[in-house]
Length: 309
Ligand SMILES: [Zn+2]
Image (cartoon, rainbow, N blue to C red; front, side, top):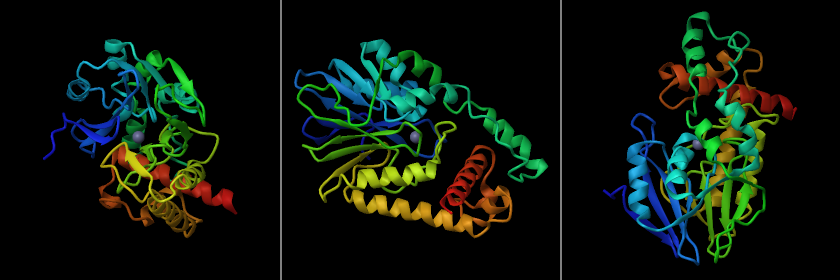
Protein backbone atom coordinates (compact mmCIF):
# COMPACT_ATOMS: atom_id res chain seq x y z
CA UNK A 1 0.00 0.00 0.00
CA UNK A 2 1.34 3.41 -0.96
CA UNK A 3 1.97 5.69 1.97
CA UNK A 4 -0.37 8.66 2.09
CA UNK A 5 2.59 10.80 3.08
CA UNK A 6 4.70 10.33 -0.02
CA UNK A 7 4.59 13.02 -2.68
CA UNK A 8 4.44 11.04 -5.87
CA UNK A 9 6.00 12.47 -9.06
CA UNK A 10 3.32 12.82 -11.75
CA UNK A 11 5.12 14.91 -14.38
CA UNK A 12 8.19 17.18 -14.35
CA UNK A 13 7.56 19.72 -11.56
CA UNK A 14 4.23 18.15 -10.57
CA UNK A 15 3.73 15.88 -7.56
CA UNK A 16 0.62 14.35 -6.07
CA UNK A 17 -0.08 13.95 -2.34
CA UNK A 18 -2.83 11.63 -1.16
CA UNK A 19 -4.36 13.62 1.66
CA UNK A 20 -6.39 11.41 4.00
CA UNK A 21 -10.13 12.10 4.32
CA UNK A 22 -11.96 11.85 7.63
CA UNK A 23 -13.46 8.36 8.17
CA UNK A 24 -17.04 7.91 7.03
CA UNK A 25 -16.76 10.34 4.13
CA UNK A 26 -16.90 7.53 1.57
CA UNK A 27 -13.56 8.21 -0.09
CA UNK A 28 -10.14 7.41 1.42
CA UNK A 29 -8.24 10.45 0.19
CA UNK A 30 -8.31 13.65 -1.80
CA UNK A 31 -5.41 14.66 -4.04
CA UNK A 32 -3.31 17.73 -3.43
CA UNK A 33 -1.07 18.61 -6.38
CA UNK A 34 2.21 20.38 -5.75
CA UNK A 35 3.45 22.48 -8.68
CA UNK A 36 7.05 23.62 -8.48
CA UNK A 37 7.87 26.93 -10.15
CA UNK A 38 11.07 28.20 -11.77
CA UNK A 39 12.09 29.97 -8.54
CA UNK A 40 11.85 26.82 -6.41
CA UNK A 41 8.58 27.76 -4.71
CA UNK A 42 5.61 25.42 -4.59
CA UNK A 43 1.99 26.10 -5.59
CA UNK A 44 -0.60 23.84 -3.99
CA UNK A 45 -3.77 22.87 -5.85
CA UNK A 46 -6.40 21.75 -3.26
CA UNK A 47 -4.71 21.38 0.14
CA UNK A 48 -7.36 18.90 1.37
CA UNK A 49 -9.42 18.36 4.52
CA UNK A 50 -9.35 20.54 7.65
CA UNK A 51 -8.04 17.78 9.92
CA UNK A 52 -4.76 17.39 11.80
CA UNK A 53 -4.05 14.17 9.88
CA UNK A 54 -4.56 15.86 6.51
CA UNK A 55 -2.48 18.84 7.52
CA UNK A 56 0.36 16.63 8.67
CA UNK A 57 0.36 14.61 5.43
CA UNK A 58 0.54 17.78 3.36
CA UNK A 59 3.23 19.40 5.50
CA UNK A 60 5.35 16.23 5.38
CA UNK A 61 5.11 16.20 1.58
CA UNK A 62 5.90 19.91 1.31
CA UNK A 63 8.97 19.71 3.51
CA UNK A 64 10.81 23.01 3.77
CA UNK A 65 9.80 24.30 0.32
CA UNK A 66 8.29 27.81 0.36
CA UNK A 67 4.60 27.80 -0.59
CA UNK A 68 3.76 30.71 -2.89
CA UNK A 69 0.08 30.12 -3.62
CA UNK A 70 -2.89 27.83 -3.29
CA UNK A 71 -5.61 27.38 -5.88
CA UNK A 72 -8.87 25.74 -4.80
CA UNK A 73 -10.79 23.88 -7.52
CA UNK A 74 -13.92 24.43 -5.42
CA UNK A 75 -14.96 25.17 -1.87
CA UNK A 76 -15.82 21.73 -0.55
CA UNK A 77 -14.08 21.00 2.74
CA UNK A 78 -12.21 17.96 1.42
CA UNK A 79 -10.41 20.20 -1.11
CA UNK A 80 -10.31 23.62 0.52
CA UNK A 81 -10.57 22.87 4.25
CA UNK A 82 -6.81 22.86 4.75
CA UNK A 83 -6.32 26.26 3.10
CA UNK A 84 -6.67 28.40 6.22
CA UNK A 85 -4.02 26.54 8.22
CA UNK A 86 -1.54 26.39 5.35
CA UNK A 87 -2.06 30.07 4.55
CA UNK A 88 -1.50 30.89 8.20
CA UNK A 89 1.72 28.85 8.31
CA UNK A 90 3.17 29.99 4.98
CA UNK A 91 1.56 33.30 4.01
CA UNK A 92 0.62 31.79 0.65
CA UNK A 93 -2.07 33.52 -1.42
CA UNK A 94 -5.37 31.64 -1.80
CA UNK A 95 -7.27 31.81 -5.10
CA UNK A 96 -10.68 30.56 -6.23
CA UNK A 97 -12.84 31.10 -9.30
CA UNK A 98 -14.80 34.34 -9.11
CA UNK A 99 -18.10 32.43 -9.31
CA UNK A 100 -17.09 30.23 -6.38
CA UNK A 101 -16.19 33.31 -4.36
CA UNK A 102 -19.59 34.79 -5.15
CA UNK A 103 -21.34 31.63 -3.90
CA UNK A 104 -19.50 31.63 -0.56
CA UNK A 105 -22.12 33.60 1.32
CA UNK A 106 -24.76 31.09 0.33
CA UNK A 107 -22.59 28.13 1.30
CA UNK A 108 -21.76 29.68 4.67
CA UNK A 109 -25.45 30.24 5.29
CA UNK A 110 -26.21 26.61 4.36
CA UNK A 111 -28.69 25.71 1.66
CA UNK A 112 -32.10 27.25 2.12
CA UNK A 113 -34.39 24.56 3.50
CA UNK A 114 -35.90 22.62 0.61
CA UNK A 115 -39.69 22.65 0.24
CA UNK A 116 -40.18 19.07 1.39
CA UNK A 117 -43.95 19.31 1.08
CA UNK A 118 -43.72 20.34 -2.57
CA UNK A 119 -41.32 17.45 -3.14
CA UNK A 120 -43.99 15.10 -1.75
CA UNK A 121 -41.84 13.84 1.13
CA UNK A 122 -43.97 11.85 3.61
CA UNK A 123 -44.37 13.72 6.91
CA UNK A 124 -42.50 11.06 8.91
CA UNK A 125 -39.37 11.47 6.77
CA UNK A 126 -39.27 15.26 6.94
CA UNK A 127 -37.51 15.71 10.32
CA UNK A 128 -34.38 13.79 9.26
CA UNK A 129 -34.20 15.79 6.01
CA UNK A 130 -34.66 19.13 7.75
CA UNK A 131 -31.96 18.12 10.22
CA UNK A 132 -29.64 17.18 7.35
CA UNK A 133 -30.38 20.45 5.54
CA UNK A 134 -29.60 22.43 8.68
CA UNK A 135 -26.12 20.95 9.11
CA UNK A 136 -23.67 23.42 7.56
CA UNK A 137 -22.14 21.22 4.86
CA UNK A 138 -19.03 23.38 4.69
CA UNK A 139 -17.94 24.39 8.18
CA UNK A 140 -14.75 25.74 6.63
CA UNK A 141 -16.61 28.32 4.54
CA UNK A 142 -16.19 31.26 6.90
CA UNK A 143 -12.56 30.42 7.48
CA UNK A 144 -11.96 30.03 3.76
CA UNK A 145 -13.70 33.33 3.13
CA UNK A 146 -11.27 35.01 5.51
CA UNK A 147 -8.18 33.62 3.76
CA UNK A 148 -9.14 34.01 0.10
CA UNK A 149 -6.81 36.65 -1.31
CA UNK A 150 -7.98 36.80 -4.90
CA UNK A 151 -10.26 35.44 -7.60
CA UNK A 152 -9.63 33.86 -10.98
CA UNK A 153 -11.51 34.26 -14.25
CA UNK A 154 -11.98 31.86 -17.17
CA UNK A 155 -8.95 31.70 -19.42
CA UNK A 156 -6.64 33.39 -16.93
CA UNK A 157 -3.06 32.13 -16.62
CA UNK A 158 -1.89 31.46 -13.06
CA UNK A 159 1.06 33.47 -11.83
CA UNK A 160 3.48 30.53 -11.67
CA UNK A 161 6.96 31.37 -13.03
CA UNK A 162 8.03 28.89 -15.70
CA UNK A 163 4.65 27.27 -16.07
CA UNK A 164 1.50 27.99 -18.05
CA UNK A 165 -1.55 26.80 -16.12
CA UNK A 166 -4.80 28.16 -17.47
CA UNK A 167 -8.13 28.43 -15.63
CA UNK A 168 -11.04 26.54 -17.19
CA UNK A 169 -14.35 27.34 -15.49
CA UNK A 170 -16.41 24.15 -15.14
CA UNK A 171 -19.69 24.86 -13.31
CA UNK A 172 -21.82 21.85 -12.36
CA UNK A 173 -20.45 20.11 -9.25
CA UNK A 174 -20.41 23.61 -7.75
CA UNK A 175 -21.21 26.84 -9.54
CA UNK A 176 -17.62 28.12 -9.51
CA UNK A 177 -15.71 24.85 -9.94
CA UNK A 178 -12.54 25.23 -11.99
CA UNK A 179 -10.11 22.94 -13.78
CA UNK A 180 -6.51 23.89 -14.63
CA UNK A 181 -5.04 23.16 -18.05
CA UNK A 182 -1.32 22.83 -18.70
CA UNK A 183 -1.26 22.62 -22.47
CA UNK A 184 2.52 22.26 -22.75
CA UNK A 185 2.70 19.37 -20.29
CA UNK A 186 -0.57 17.79 -21.51
CA UNK A 187 -2.21 17.87 -18.06
CA UNK A 188 -5.66 18.81 -16.84
CA UNK A 189 -6.30 19.10 -13.10
CA UNK A 190 -9.95 18.16 -12.90
CA UNK A 191 -10.91 18.55 -9.21
CA UNK A 192 -14.29 16.87 -8.72
CA UNK A 193 -15.51 17.77 -12.22
CA UNK A 194 -14.27 14.51 -13.76
CA UNK A 195 -13.25 11.54 -11.61
CA UNK A 196 -12.18 8.22 -13.13
CA UNK A 197 -14.93 6.03 -11.59
CA UNK A 198 -17.06 8.16 -9.24
CA UNK A 199 -20.05 10.13 -10.55
CA UNK A 200 -19.81 13.53 -8.87
CA UNK A 201 -22.97 15.03 -7.42
CA UNK A 202 -24.18 18.24 -9.05
CA UNK A 203 -25.39 21.55 -7.69
CA UNK A 204 -23.49 21.12 -4.41
CA UNK A 205 -22.32 24.71 -4.07
CA UNK A 206 -25.50 26.46 -3.03
CA UNK A 207 -28.47 27.59 -5.09
CA UNK A 208 -27.71 28.77 -8.62
CA UNK A 209 -29.56 30.84 -11.19
CA UNK A 210 -28.77 28.23 -13.84
CA UNK A 211 -29.51 24.50 -13.90
CA UNK A 212 -26.53 22.48 -12.60
CA UNK A 213 -27.21 19.55 -14.95
CA UNK A 214 -27.19 21.80 -18.02
CA UNK A 215 -24.09 23.59 -16.70
CA UNK A 216 -22.34 20.28 -16.04
CA UNK A 217 -23.02 18.90 -19.54
CA UNK A 218 -21.61 22.11 -21.07
CA UNK A 219 -18.56 21.87 -18.79
CA UNK A 220 -17.96 18.23 -19.76
CA UNK A 221 -18.00 19.32 -23.38
CA UNK A 222 -15.58 22.08 -22.63
CA UNK A 223 -12.90 19.85 -21.08
CA UNK A 224 -13.48 16.98 -23.55
CA UNK A 225 -12.52 19.38 -26.33
CA UNK A 226 -9.17 20.00 -24.67
CA UNK A 227 -8.26 16.34 -25.07
CA UNK A 228 -6.64 15.65 -28.41
CA UNK A 229 -5.95 12.07 -27.33
CA UNK A 230 -2.98 12.49 -25.01
CA UNK A 231 -4.26 14.70 -22.20
CA UNK A 232 -3.65 13.26 -18.73
CA UNK A 233 -6.34 13.97 -16.14
CA UNK A 234 -5.24 14.67 -12.57
CA UNK A 235 -8.44 14.26 -10.53
CA UNK A 236 -9.31 15.48 -7.02
CA UNK A 237 -9.87 11.88 -5.83
CA UNK A 238 -8.72 8.47 -7.08
CA UNK A 239 -5.77 8.22 -9.47
CA UNK A 240 -4.57 10.13 -12.55
CA UNK A 241 -5.99 8.71 -15.77
CA UNK A 242 -6.04 8.99 -19.55
CA UNK A 243 -9.03 8.83 -21.89
CA UNK A 244 -10.58 12.04 -20.58
CA UNK A 245 -12.74 12.53 -23.66
CA UNK A 246 -14.25 9.05 -23.25
CA UNK A 247 -14.80 9.55 -19.53
CA UNK A 248 -16.60 12.84 -20.23
CA UNK A 249 -18.85 11.06 -22.72
CA UNK A 250 -19.62 8.37 -20.12
CA UNK A 251 -20.48 10.98 -17.48
CA UNK A 252 -22.68 12.92 -19.91
CA UNK A 253 -24.48 9.70 -20.86
CA UNK A 254 -25.07 8.94 -17.17
CA UNK A 255 -26.66 12.36 -16.62
CA UNK A 256 -28.80 12.09 -19.75
CA UNK A 257 -29.92 8.59 -18.75
CA UNK A 258 -30.93 9.98 -15.38
CA UNK A 259 -32.82 12.77 -17.09
CA UNK A 260 -34.68 10.19 -19.23
CA UNK A 261 -35.53 8.12 -16.15
CA UNK A 262 -36.87 11.22 -14.44
CA UNK A 263 -38.76 12.26 -17.58
CA UNK A 264 -40.50 8.88 -17.58
CA UNK A 265 -42.30 9.89 -14.34
CA UNK A 266 -43.48 13.40 -15.09
CA UNK A 267 -46.74 13.23 -13.13
CA UNK A 268 -45.63 12.23 -9.64
CA UNK A 269 -43.73 14.16 -7.01
CA UNK A 270 -39.95 14.44 -6.69
CA UNK A 271 -40.19 11.87 -3.88
CA UNK A 272 -42.05 9.39 -6.11
CA UNK A 273 -39.71 9.96 -9.06
CA UNK A 274 -36.61 9.48 -6.86
CA UNK A 275 -38.04 6.20 -5.56
CA UNK A 276 -38.18 4.78 -9.10
CA UNK A 277 -34.50 5.52 -9.81
CA UNK A 278 -31.50 3.31 -9.16
CA UNK A 279 -29.29 4.51 -6.29
CA UNK A 280 -25.96 3.16 -5.12
CA UNK A 281 -26.82 1.19 -1.98
CA UNK A 282 -30.53 1.18 -2.91
CA UNK A 283 -33.33 3.69 -2.35
CA UNK A 284 -34.24 2.11 0.99
CA UNK A 285 -30.69 2.57 2.22
CA UNK A 286 -30.80 6.35 1.76
CA UNK A 287 -31.32 8.45 4.87
CA UNK A 288 -30.53 11.91 6.15
CA UNK A 289 -27.97 13.71 4.02
CA UNK A 290 -27.69 11.06 1.30
CA UNK A 291 -31.48 11.03 0.96
CA UNK A 292 -31.56 14.81 0.77
CA UNK A 293 -28.84 14.75 -1.88
CA UNK A 294 -30.74 12.10 -3.90
CA UNK A 295 -33.87 14.26 -3.81
CA UNK A 296 -31.92 17.35 -4.84
CA UNK A 297 -30.36 15.48 -7.78
CA UNK A 298 -33.81 14.28 -8.84
CA UNK A 299 -35.28 17.79 -8.58
CA UNK A 300 -32.41 19.17 -10.68
CA UNK A 301 -32.90 16.54 -13.38
CA UNK A 302 -36.60 17.31 -13.40
CA UNK A 303 -35.95 20.98 -13.86
CA UNK A 304 -33.41 20.15 -16.59
CA UNK A 305 -36.00 18.05 -18.45
CA UNK A 306 -38.66 20.73 -18.03
CA UNK A 307 -36.35 23.40 -19.45
CA UNK A 308 -35.38 21.20 -22.38
CA UNK A 309 -38.91 20.87 -23.81
ZN1 LIG B 1 -16.48 18.35 -4.12
